[in-house]
Image 1 (tube, protein in one colour):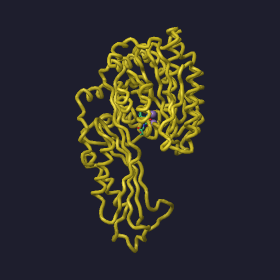
Image 2: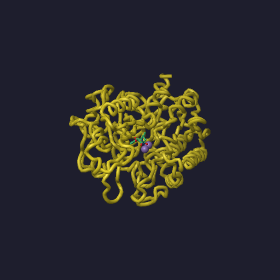
Image 3: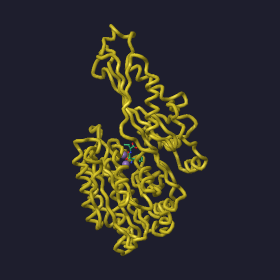
Image 4: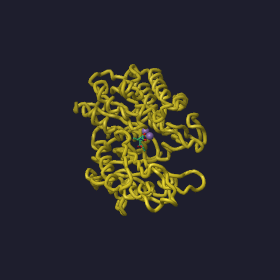
Length: 471
Ligand code: BES
Ligand code: MN
Ligand code: MN
C-alpha cells in the first residue's frame, strides 16, 4: 500500500477523530476551560497510543508556585539508534470563540461544508497536529517497517495561544528527552491550496496594557471640562504618537535591531503570485492596503515590525450621552517584531515613551503581558529545509515556494534551546479564519499535510548524515 492510498483509506477515521478532539473546548486563555485543556492533552495521548506510538505522555508545565497547562510528549524511535531525530511542534490549545453569535454553527460542534471542516482549532492547530500520526502510520504502511526511518518526537503545547509562558522552562527542563537534529513545526499556512510553500520565518510579539488615571472619579464636563486633563484625550494623543506620517513606529530605538530587507528576500517575495484584491478579500474585505511607506504589502506583514492598538476603552460607552470627563483610560497594545528585536527592549521603550509624553495631572502605568516571543527563522539553505520542500512537492505534485508568516509562536526558543534548525510544514490557509468566527480547514489539505509528513521522514532519513553531522 502506498502512502497516498493508505491516507485515503483512513480519511474517514481521521476526520471522525479530529471532530472528537475539536469538540473539547481547550481554550488556554479561559481559566474556566483549563480542565478542558487537560482533557485535550489526555485525548491526544490516547490517540497516539492507539496509533501505536511506544511513548505518549502528558507533561505538566510550570511549578507549584506558577502552574501551567499540560503539553503532550510522544516518541517513536527509529530502529537505528544513530538515525536522525526530528521533533514535531504544534499546540492543542485554542483561541477564545467570542463573538459567539457570528458562528454559523457552534465552535465546538464541528460541521462539514463543501470540503471544509468548521470548528475552533480546525486549522489552528488541532488539524495540523493530528495529520502527523496519520502521516507516520502511512509511512509505516508503505515501508512495511515496524519503526520509522528517523526517530520522531512530538511536543504539543497547551499554552501557545496564551503566549507560551512556561514553554521555554519546559524545553530547558526536558532538554535531554527533547534532543533532536531538526524541529518540524506544523502551525503555519501555505501560499494557496494549489501553491505549496514552506514558511521560513515568523514575527515575534510583545504585548502591553496602558492605564491612564486622571481625577479620582468621573467629573461633570460642564463644571470641569476644558480645565483639567482628560485621560481619554491623553490616551488618544499618546497612541496617535506611536506612528509618524510615514507609518513608522516612533518608539526610541525601535528599529535598532531591525535589519534591512535583503535583495534575496525581496526576490523570494516577488516570486509569489500576489494579487492585492485577493489578499484584501482574505483580509475581511478590508477597503485598502495601508502601512509603512516604501514597503509592499507582503514586506510589511513578513519583514517589518508593527505597533497595533488591540483595544481601547474608558468613560461612557452605554446608551445615550453622559457628559463626563472620565477618571481613567485604557488600551491594549501589541507589537510584531522582526530580525533581532527583543520583546523586553520594546516594552522598555514603550515605558520610556509613555512616561516622557504623559502630561502633568495624568498618572500612566504600563503593564506588560507575558514575556512575548522573539522572531524566528529557518536557515533557508539548511539540508533539512530542502527535505521539507521535497516532501511538500511530492505531496502536491508541484514546485514548493518559500514564504514567511506575520504571526508568532515560541519557535525561536525551540531552535535556540534545542539547537536545531526549524522546518515549517504547514497546510493552513490565510482564508482559514484563524482566531475568528467560523474557523475552518480545507479537509483535502489536511490529508496532503499527512502525505507530506509521511514523505518527510524518508527525505530526512536520506540526508541523515548531513543532519547528524551537527551533533
Ligand atoms: N498558528 C499561529 C501563528 C500563525 C499566525 C501562523 C498566522 C500563521 C498565520 C499561532 O497559533 C498564533 O496565533 N500565535 C499568536 C501568538 C500570541 C498569542 C503570543 C499570534 O501570532 O498572535
Ligand atoms: Mn497556532
Ligand atoms: Mn493561533
